[in-house]
Image (cartoon, rainbow, N blue to C red; front, side, top):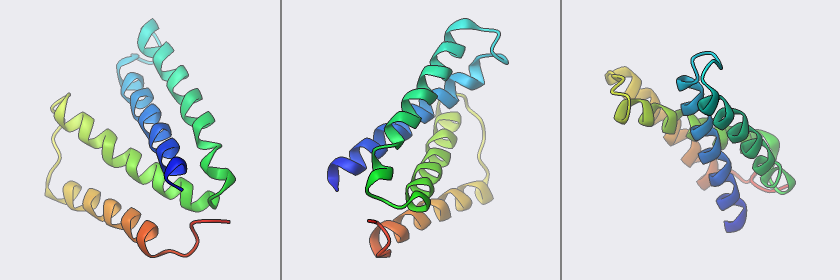
Length: 111
C-alpha cells in the first residue's frame, strides 16, 4: 500500500505543477507554461490509474482532489502572495481533516 500512496502522491504533485503552470499560461498564449500544463495533467492522470487498480475511485479522488486543493492554495499563498483569510485556512484545515479521517478510519481503502 505504501507504493500506491507514493504513486498517488506523485499524481498529486504533477497536478499541482500543472495547475500552477496553468495560472501562468495566460489562457495558453505562453508556450512553456502551456506545455508544462498539458504534460503535467497527462502525467497526473496516468499516475492516477495505478492507485485506481487497488483503491475505490471515490477514495482515490477524495485524496487526490483534497490534497491538490490544499497544495495549490499553499503554492498560491507562499509563491504568488495570494492571501488566505481565516475562513479559507479553516476550510483547508477541514479538507486535511477529511483526508485524514478517510485514510485512518475508513475500511473502504481497498477493493
